[in-house]
Length: 514
Image (cartoon, rainbow, N blue to C red):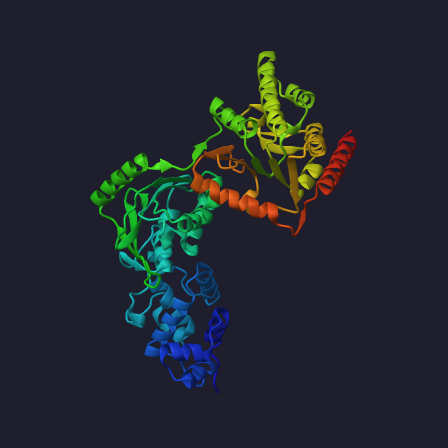
């Protein structure tokens, strides 16, 4: 009695492959593929059809999530999970699909015969090294590049910096979903930093894709982006990745869209050393498109904030918090007194607040348009907590502070007062903000500058830029956010109603605490 090939059927269904599509692509008789699926014809590991089917499956499942799905199937089947290269992934796939796969594994243990799919045997479990091992030094396609790069990045100490040089902003590899997600994953898991230098071509669409791919990491300060102008036409474009002192990767791609990128792994120490020296020179003379300030509280950060709020021009703000500038001076001084400053420090901070407050009021009175977006879920969180966490810089301090219940209510009442008295101050409350906006605040001085405070890291970070190519992308994002209607409470009366409701709940929270 025939036993259906459940694994072959499962992978076909997962990837959305039909019998006809597979048979047509591989020039096979459709009935042969059907017999393989039904088990009326056994699909053996050493058959040429197996090799072709395995290659086609890998070509059809080129996303990282497809590979992760296959890995889960291998784990269930108790196959080796050391698949750091495409060759090893193919070996596992063949053993998983083959009708004689179980027999081969029993006879051969953890290794495979050398000529299954023309690949070398897997390393036995006891022989595996903790460092990354690679079959060869040339990789083709995004998946092979990701497989080769991942273990190298994973071996880096926490907070390490990787240099990335793009000879053109049109490089598809840099914005490929699998490649960019690998970098972003390492940023999230291991605090990886990227020092990225890009030769710009003037193609705004290409730069837009690059900024969009790494926007979250730009906001958090994990990507330092610099540009060099005057790129000329080349036959190919390259991406240099300097991982560590003994490992680098050179990715080369054509200007077309069909050929896959080719990556060369570089191990020659002299080559890497000189490559690093050249990268340092390129980075030194490239133009940074953003400046990243740490939490070392200093006058320049104050002046950036002053320029944003207190100089002529429209200002757009997206805030996953609330803004103390809308408090009255009396409310600000009340909270300031709870911070334990000496009388001299208190006087200085109070005077700075008044400088900002009067500057902002002057700009609004002169007709500058201010738009601010708040998160409804954050407002509800403030009610539940009875406080609001924010960067200490709003009170001329380092680190973070928790603005108390009275302070939060004072800010909300300030918003209401400005909405009722100042037509050129507008506010939008969204049901929720995307992950991109969590724990940060954007200040967009239209056509002038961008300032973002990010407070998800151990210490707050501020990024600032006056580069139009960056401003354009962030402004477009804000305008889309402002224009969206679904899930938003947009009218002035409705916003005021929500703010009053939140303020009343805060006052009740304060009473309950007593």
